[in-house]
Image (cartoon, rainbow, N blue to C red; front, side, top):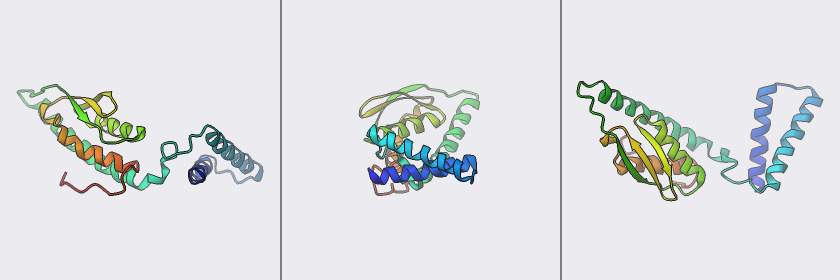
Length: 168
């Protein structure tokens, strides 16, 4: 808990300074008091954990977001081709996808990633699965979501091993 408190204090202090750029001692003292008050309130509410202070996993999250950006571009191309084709080969499908992330933040990252990907929307989140609406049938294969689930879990620190590159 102490580690999360220190990380939260550092992040809040950097954020405060980046927004204010004040170096006047009295104003800086008020900033320090504000940061300490927020950290103390978080400790008292017993919410100093990896979900409240996810900054320890910043690098994996950034790596994940770059991977997700690439997947979003690929899905955009697929959706545009389907919509602009003369046949308009749209085939809406609902499918249940197993959700491997265990924590709430991991499940949220996975569900949001599905929704951010063009052609798919997270409709409902349950304990171990997510109901997804896909614009195209070929976008509804549960195996295609497996890499995203594993990478989302890694990005929030649920697994230590980085998911293998699968060529996608």
